[in-house]
Length: 587
Image 1 (cartoon, rainbow, N blue to C red):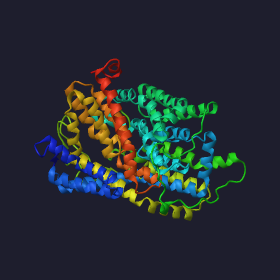
Image 2: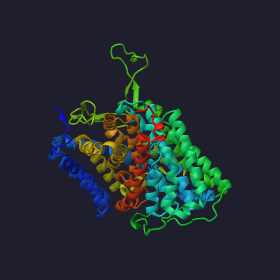
Image 3: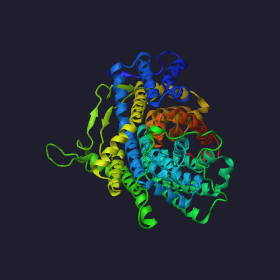
Image 4: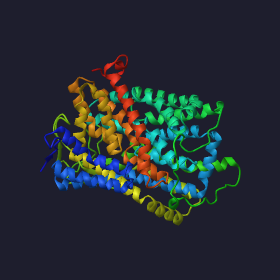
């Protein structure tokens, strides 16, 4: 029997919204104020969400349980799988000693911590966001920064702040492609609109990043390099998104930005070198938990010339980059996850109406598990969607084409080339699994919470509160995207949750639906630094376990202020010339 979502179960929008917000409040207060461990905070929030979904919003208990299990499965694959394997690779390079050589090679480009941060957290991180997304950039850059000597709070918080402007075009444009599907709006128009919002912040975020790290005066000392990094990213971001499409925006922009910044640093040097790796302007007593310290490096020096040693040190990360990029392409996924659809009667390949060969899921590489209690049993209703729509609940176990699998294979290959034996790799993997066990529980619980709020309608109830803001909707609609990512940990998931609502509400208010759908994605990128999933990835990558609340308190201010700035730009684009002339498709 199909269950229809109820968005105002108490007959009072204020009470219903406050009740729907309880799980979010439980999560944030547990982490930020009561200093409860992240996995316990996530489980407490999940428990409160189950109680509210069942007893306040009337969701059948078996459906609520299925929604939580569905979310937990999606948390472990792809997110947890990425975290586990990137930490495995990082441990291999640290114990082998090659990470110290990599650190020295980066120092030869620049030993200024501010410039290292620009290169790694912003430029290098943006490449991994564009190629893979889903936690990969924070995991990789956080691990590198901690290896370079940045304090755990600095490495975690700054990796999160840097991973904002590229997010809407992450994972080869997945958020925009998904947004087009759920809203029915033109994919290219959405790409163009987001590409007329985020480039402003692609210039701003590098300045913001260095200011957050070293302070205003230290930021001004290297403003030419920051400007080069930001502009060389923003310009390609605008051009590719507006004239090519969403898929290669981040990859192209990141490669150009890295090349431009590296080239610029060959001809320009800062007047003073900033060597402190701790945060300026605040007490930063963060340190890696002693019980989780990496063992001392063995074999840390390489014989022969320095250049071969540097190449060997970079080799695992170059392999990682190649694998991640390959695993992120749709052609690679199609090769394994699908197969030609065969007509059982004629034994010939089925053709679509355009005469092109049809493909179907490959049960070997992409087996599907249908959550029958949930699949097509939950119905979203207006005003959240234009017409009643049942929700699917099919878990696709893409075990080989998941990004984490590419990372694992790259780590094994890199480990073998570094001289590890198969038994040594197996032992290291088991140790890594033990180290990240609580992080995996947290990620599973957080995604369980996100999926439960989606299927129960708790998220839509909060979204409708934003939609009731009238003339202020461009601001609050943008913050709705921020809320969606803060809840789910994914710009793609936020677009699925609120994309339809953004279109319906904007059309009712006479605002461009393309503008507000794009604002959902652009505003969402600033929520990426406060979602519990990303914070857990950051704390795990930097081996600063149990300090998720401190990371959250550090990044929250940056997240909300940047989200409000995005909302301000969207408001100008909605109402004020010449910004309104940037809107694609008009009103």
